[in-house]
Length: 157
Image (cartoon, rainbow, N blue to C red; front, side):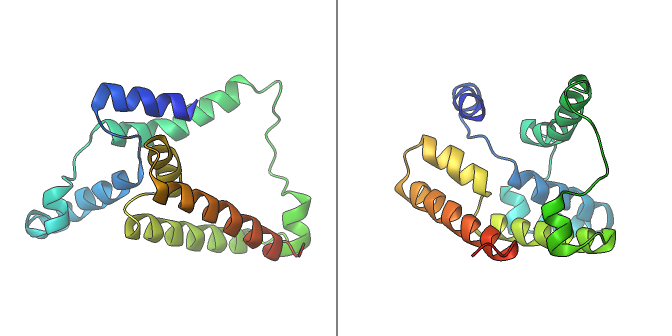
C-alpha cells in the first residue's frame, strides 16, 4: 500500500513520499517562536521553509490513522500494557529503561535521517521506486544490519 501511495504522490505532487523533513520544519517553527531572526538567516530553513504542508499533515495523520485503525479493529485486537516476553527476558520490566532506550533510539534515527537526507523508509520506498542503485544497496545493508542487531540485542547469535 505504501508503494502505491508513493506512486500516487509522485503523480499528484511531483514529489516523493517522505516525512523526515517535517521534523526539521517543525523544529524551525519552534525556533522561530523564540528566535525568528535565526530561522530567517539559517541557510537550511531558507531552502526548507518551516511551514505546514502536505507532508506535515501526513505526519499528523499517521498516528491518528493508526489509532483509529486500532480502535475500529478492537474486537480483533486487545489493548494491553503487558510487555512482550522477549523484551522482559532481555531488558526487564522497567518503564524508565524503556523510555530512555526509546528516546535515545529515536534521537539516533532522527540524526541519521537528517545526515542521510532522508529516513530509512524514504530511501527504501522512494529511492527503490526510482530504481536508484544507492537505495537498493542501502536497503540490503539496512536489512542485514537490522537482522544482526536484533540477534545481538536479543542474544540469539
